[in-house]
Length: 257
Image 1: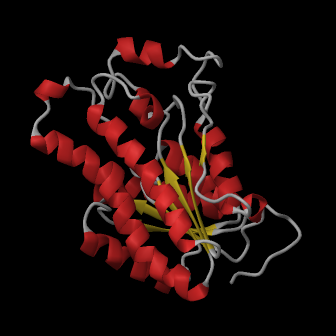
Image 2: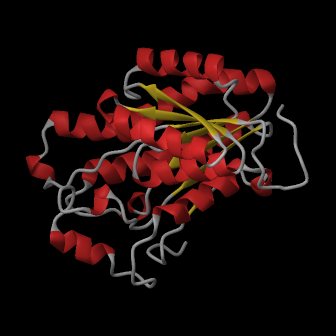
């Protein structure tokens, strides 16, 4: 177990793996964890190598430590190979953030099986694969924190987003199941953001009509990715040591359970 100090938010001595870490929420989370002292493994697809290199350099310039690891987290051999190399390079993984995700706006009756499979593979299967690869080490050390990135749409549902809503609801269900199975030594929680200022809320990913609807929440704005990064820092740290199976909602009031 990594050494603890008197700062409940300190991650000094810990190693974190963040999937899909080169942009948006994943990048903000990686920066926050590194800023708190964690050694951060930046997961990315091969075509994102330059962005990953820039993020590693930014963390190093701020006095932190990070390394980049290319892997397709929907493929079991890639995931297991990545986990092995991360642990050889940075040390045993204490914190896993399952952030990699895609979104698709499409009428249900126009969805192909490949559309459905692609979204479920990235947004749910990858969470299973990464947890399955990292948990044995956490169990052996009897220490760890897993943070799964869900979405407020996992609660709300939304027309034209059936695969995404299904996957994110599944992430929350998986989170609760793993939290019960691996407590108390390992904490598993989730974050279900509302609308965040990222590429997922661009006209390349969503229609202008839906982007406008996304902003129709009490906060009357999109979140900054760092607001999700701060939530992840809380869940990764000892400050959240009594949180198990919870889904925190930095959502601007889109969902009020």
